[in-house]
Length: 140
Image (cartoon, rainbow, N blue to C red; front, side, top):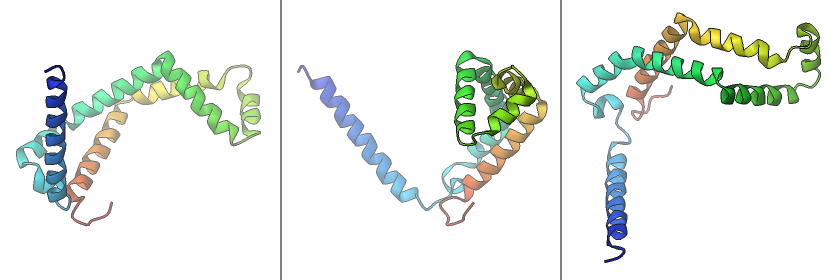
């Protein structure tokens, strides 16, 4: 009795995973177009502009945060570790300012441009089209 809920949870998880594996094997060669009903495909297409706005908003918030700034600094450090003297050359042009203080505002500007949402929307529509053809043997 003590472990009955744990055992029930394990059995349920095993059952669901088993059903998923069977479904996945049966549908592996099908395209999304064959699996997803047309009304859901249209709903997904219609939601792409909102999804793009959400992604851009979250990207801007992330890079505007301290955590995002630290991550960007780490990425820049890794980039310049591999390029040796390039950082010294860049440092000569920007003076005593840290490179991150020059790059971060430009990344924020990128996220603030309306074209960024348009670009992302186009990419998502294209990827959705690629997803429709996956499984049918077509390559990207």
